[in-house]
Image (cartoon, rainbow, N blue to C red; front, top):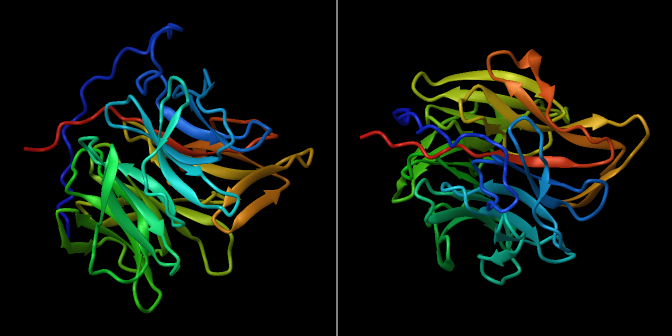
Length: 332
């Protein structure tokens, strides 16, 4: 069992004042990154304030994006970018000021997904699915170049990595055992032979874990039941090993994101539209279309019934959100 020791409190974030047009776009001012089609294709990277105001489109190109996430110093975004009509994604760095992107992952037919920054901002973990259909986790420098397998000896599918905000020795991921049982695990990337099963069969197909900024909790989504399309949102207290069901709803399969103070979770959920407006987003199995909108919602961890919509545009898809937290000092 991992210790569950929390990180020390983050230093006070910069004052949230009016943004000068000449100031570079940074995470301190626009802490929430997400993708939206705003009624058009393909989905582009956007950023906004923590209250949902001042939405700013970052990219404007022919690529479709998913899962943008701020770097620890708040100056750039890593994201999945659609590179081909066949649905292959690469990992790219996106400039939040001019929207330009730089591909980091090798130019191969593999599908790369779910980038996650190390606490020092020098490395990125991501999942890659090759021709054999098996998902594996890889590590690379933020400048690209040489990559290495996170767990060379693990042959079963494993993916959806996320590094702790404040401790690069803790990386959460999902893995499926030879019997087809999926669980959440934690690993030290420098000692990949030392792995801890966190969920231990207590949730159905848990995936997309998200560390709280203090490092003491994990949020994740899982299937509700084998016969249900709904997803469940859980929080795991690492010190006590207590697992709490926060909500069950028609969430989309996207990583929940913690608010910097640990009080809220940002999730994306499908909402039926009154006018039959359609959203269109490229999923792992092709193009999905429905008479639904996808909205970003804030869920209070201690009062899930008070959840509220942060974005509400009936003709669009707003999803794959992440929330920047100022870097915390690791425990001594």
